[in-house]
Amino acid sequence: MTAFELFFLIGLSLYLIQLFVFTIGASAKYKKIKEEQYPTASLIVAARNEESNIIECLCTLDKLEYPSNKLEIIIVNDHSTDNTGALIDEFIKGKERFKCFVPDEPIGNLKGKTNALAYAIKKSVGEIILTTDADCRVNPNWVKTIASYYQDNVAFVGGYTYQKADTIFGGMQGIDFLYLLTVGAGVMNIGKPSGCIGNNMSFSRKAYDEIGGYENLPFSITEDFNLLKAIHELKKYKVLTPIEEDILVVSEPCLTWKTLYWQKKRWGVGGMKNDWFGYFTMLGGYLSHIAIVLLPFFFTTLSLYLAVSKIMLDYFFISPVFSKLNLKLKLRHFLAFEIYFIIYVLILPFIVLPNRKVMWKGREF
Figure 1 (tube, rainbow, N blue to C red):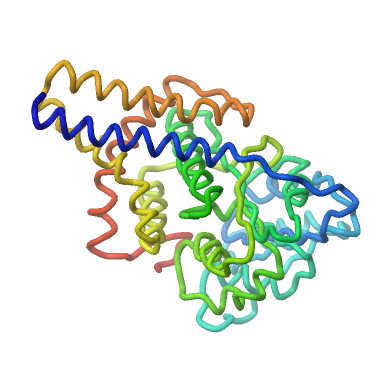
Figure 2 (figure 1 turned 60 degrees about the vertical axis):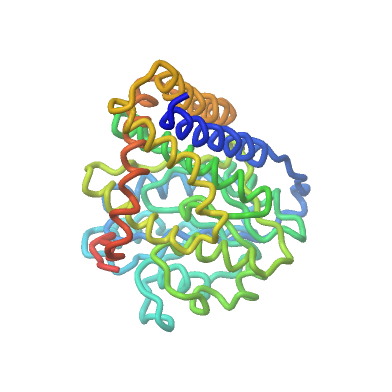
């Protein structure tokens, strides 16, 4: 066995073990409470310059099934410069569950979306708070199903988000989302949360107040993970992400490579706040991706088999998730994802480490 084959085999073996652990963690089952025990809920959407998406989002929110006296829907117009505000006002007219606010001043040192969310939370009354984005579509049972997991010792319930897969570019991003969220769910459900997604998450007001709210946390461009980490560090509540079709959210994919670049950089910068375990979860994949890129220079029959095995591992890791969420995994989308996945995993550290500037929603962070 050559040194390269040994390197590849070690990386792939570690990757296999990690995927096995992630799969076991992500498959965890949890007890649910009865419908008469559902808590009051506040659903918050922070919208900035979303005139092309906001109406479709509001339509799905309007169809949510939840006791009318237990749900409020708060839309925060985060100082949009397009027609978003007018569209919101027109849509919610006469709909009692809906409210709309424009943040009038920053809360502490908060800015951007985090400030908008903190402002809305102060205005809200629900015992649990759910967040999604203006470019998302939710299932009618979304709030009801998430609420059913809120036993007394649960403080955070996350969900899965998929991208519209009308094109190979969108389908590739959708697989990437589900892959990363399955890894995140896997480690979260074994007690080591390393990520979540803000367009499909919820948390208890009690835990939010205990950490002092967003304004008591250090600023992060990934406010969702920042909050999850703080709640977990209280060491008194459960945080979980079940795989369930009714809490699947569908969002719009990035339309250009430039937008996708900034999304990945934003996640990478936020992910730097992970502990050693978070970085360790990336090690097997990173080593395997290095070996695949080097394969043309150190080609052997065994190394080719190892490369094919890595791709097959990814497929059999993500395929059951697609099945549980009642989604179709298309081969052309998967192959595009594999190429994209190998490249961005390798270059992301070189994008993030030199500087942490991020452009998002027309703002620089």
